[in-house]
Amino acid sequence: MPQEAVGSDDSPVMDASRGLIPTTPLANRSQPRPSAGRAGPVPGSPPALLSQLALAAVRRLHRALGASDVRFELADGNAVGAARSEAVATLRFRDARAPFALALDPDLALGDLYASGRIAIDGSLVDFLSRTDGSGSHGGLAGAAHRLLGAGRRAPASWRQALGRAAGNARHHYDVGNDFYALWLDERMVYTCAYFARPELSLAEAQLAKLDHVCRKLRLQPGQSVLELGCGWGALAIHMASRYGVQVRAFNVSLEQIDWAREQARKEGVASRVEFVLDDYRNAHGHFDALASVGMLEHVGPAHFAELGRVIDRTLAPNGLGFLHTIGRARPQALNRWVATRIFPHAHPPALSEMARIFEPNGFAVLDVENLRLHYERTAQLWLERFQQSWPAIVARVPEQTARAFELYLAGTVAAFRCAWMCLYQVVFARAKSAAVPWTRADLYEAAHGAR
Image (cartoon, rainbow, N blue to C red; front, side, top):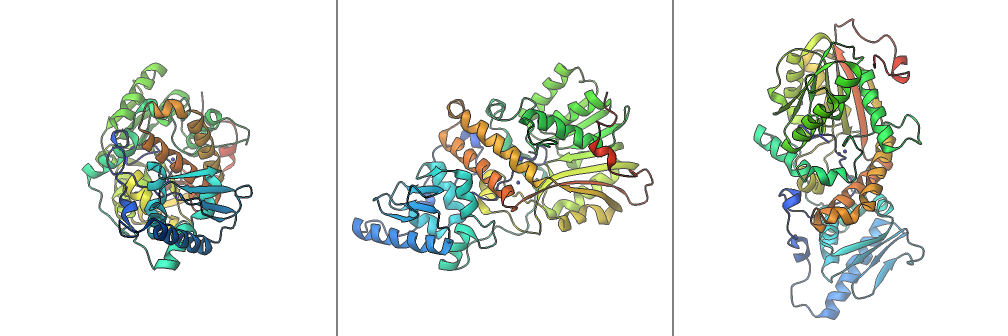
């Protein structure tokens, strides 16, 4: 569920692909050990028997999947499903044991096998993921395996995120290298859902429109103070200061992002108005006229929502406005195990009912909720296109295993929002007794409010 892992941007949280990527920083990963491939027949099985068993497993998986336009091709030349000329996508197994790994644990094995090169997917990667993943409700490949083999393993429903672990979780994804992200993000390095006020906007134009959309929702005025919890590469904080004349204190736990943000603030001439703090959001203090968090909440976890609510309560002025932007769900549901263990450790895109734990105990009232799900689909599609176009430069900077994992992750993000497995919530709130609240929403869709 996208950046901000307790201090970065709402990096897309994909809910369609599965992966096998060791939980060490992405940039430092060596070739993965094929642990998923150890499942299945005992080593030494006769090749003919191994081939027959693999074909039987794939046939059963494909039948349970019910996706007639997807094709599976085994390493020995056998195939199941649609003819290649008619298939929307074809999964090719490159070794004899990969089918067993996929059948036994698709939650981890699909991305694992793809990242390590043990499978290839021809055709539309997004269409393949859209047809073969049911987003955790016993649909798609995982659901097919569930029906054939019984209930699979689940990610823990709750977890504890200490201050040190939060920082480690952020660095796991975001400290791959600024030059890596610069190859496929826009020039401002915004790693959150863009806002396509008009469908034809470019990625850069839509990201700028998103920054203004956030500022309008906060009704920013010159001279106000803003607290940003999780600032990514600093685009929103810099935009607030340069275009809306406010003073910003922004928290992040990724050193690479903070260094980048400070340099950009100097270049924009707003270093005196933006303070980038290398620290966990829970250490924020002071009083502010507005509070914004874009893409951090999905990395906080529901177990810590009350704690986040207390941070907001002690820092937001009596008549201040708050704004949360997060990848979310239509109902409470765990993130699949690949994302939650390989890409974004312990991430959890919340349902609105879970977010109530932030507001209700602290006397906050929700003023506005907007779901930009289709805007995130478009954003992730543009990221994926730029990523694939930059492939030679990407594999020159990171191991191919990391590059393949990110490609699958971005394609899965497109599929997740296209198929409504994920939502993108923007929530505006204030203290319940505050009278300094917007009279209507009309100004949100007019010219930038208060911009200079």
